[in-house]
Amino acid sequence: QSARSDRERAAGLAELGDVERRTGRLGEARKRHEASIEILEKLSLANPADSGAQRDVSVGWSRLGGVLREAGELREARK
Image (tube, rainbow, N blue to C red; front, top):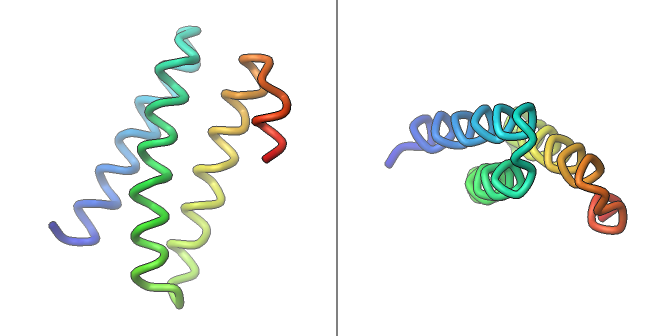
């Protein structure tokens, strides 16, 4: 798979996670965002000079943090 298709898959998972969050399915939202972050971190490690990839990881963690905060998992959200 190409980096582009991996990035698109990660973006799709993040979008699904956002939908799950809006519909109150926080456990599913967490799983989707964690899967997205896993892909994005691999892409970032494969190309550490890519600032866009670094930003994508940061945004992914921020989205996951929002889900955790909403779920009342404040200790996890702070990590």
